[in-house]
Length: 316
Image 1 (cartoon, rainbow, N blue to C red):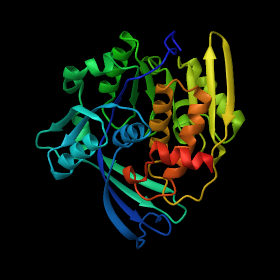
Image 2: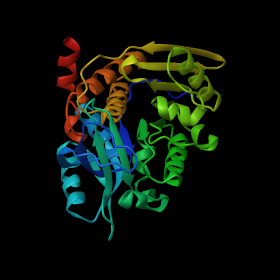
Image 3: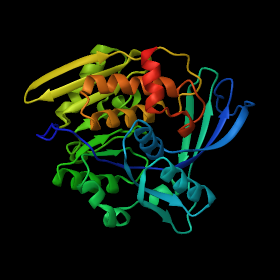
Image 4: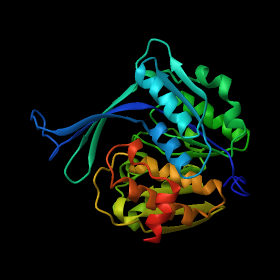
């Protein structure tokens, strides 16, 4: 891992988005031009950055968060929420005159979701905006990022992380095509099947195709690849020198109620486990457990479990 994946990790910085999630439960997703009646409409806090930093905090980490809130009541509410979770909010900023980011989420009867987002204040998390807070990246052991904030900001953050020997974990969501100059700065990448296909062109459906996709990501300079595959588990692959070792780490079979924050819960839990020195395979297994608990609950932040809840789930 570029000579940096060793020792006892203690500090985490998350850079990412904050959204107001407008959630509607429906029996099935509508076809184009069709209207479907829903129920249980609610507005809840979310956004990939927010979900992941809260997941890490609830799993025992003490993370710092670099984010941009809207100048509205929701933004102020979120600032208090982060502080109440024990998150360092010194780099949680407010975009003057901008509303908070918005996500429109539909959840069907099987717990699957369909999401549209409007970045709004998240688009203001520019390279210039994060300049005063780069020390939070310099002094971290891990930097965790997603793709709901400007690409140029992620590039700068990753470059600063590498200069200061901070490990970069990228959750490449939402699915996007990324340049090699960015990917070569990443130590651990955590795509789901859709995101892995967007990055590699390989349809990931089983262990063989997951291994092929992982190999292609290794070829682009990423030492560790974790492809989440729903109930199948996660394909975990390492490349050191010219040797590659991959295996499927099984997940947990639960009845899904709402999968909205499952991937975010997985990522926050994964990095919090790595912070304590937990091995990668066991960290993935515990992250699976956290995600499994989350899908049995409604909402995004509201579904994220605590460390005690995950421990209880794993004990059965």
